[in-house]
Length: 284
Ligand SMILES: [Zn+2]
Image 1 (cartoon, rainbow, N blue to C red):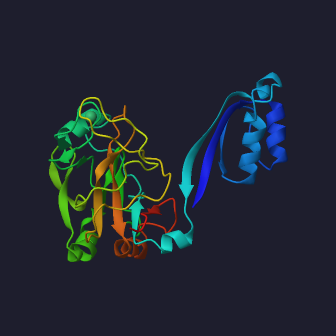
Image 2 (image 1 turned 60 degrees about the vertical axis):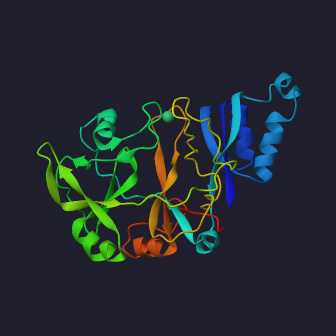
């Protein structure tokens, strides 16, 4: 696992020159770059934050900040893992209806959620999309903008490949008519039978919601996803926990897939085997 930090400042021309001498190309003015932990990162941090004299020397540019931003995993770490977080839910194909109204989409589709942080949503109605989608060659699934924990599949693909595995689907409605789509279904992703061992990990950085007391874990990828507290069999499930930042309306569940389900997604070219699309759950 490589840990990358994001470094931000209002850079001056002398900073541009200094970082260029370390092989890092930045632009003058406000600019952020990502850098892997290691010798060069340490050198930069030492250079800019060594002591208070740095400010007298005018060494540190204005608004300089560095924070741990993302973990990247090796192929071996993916190979060795039994379960993955699925980040690529398919190419987004538009917004759910009603258009341009996130609040109404949530209100019309879910119940029992906290109005302050949108955590703990239970889906009670089908998603509505504008029209029957146009499918590109070999495309069998898509996602919807705003909805980060649901997947939509071509109906015949679902019936041939996913249904025989014991997975279920839900209808998707078209436009204002509310007619059931002939070509698309929503995959029903069951909720995990166990919580994650996620408290006091790097993901546990947010305060609980003041209204419902639910704690949302960070959506950033900062480490292996912690394992479930108890083992259970599944192909695909969504976490009991919500992910997002405390004060936002983002409260998605993370989708966890088994190696077997990952292989199916790879076989049908729904995802690629890299750390932008899946990342490992640590083995228990
Ligand atoms: Zn809440």
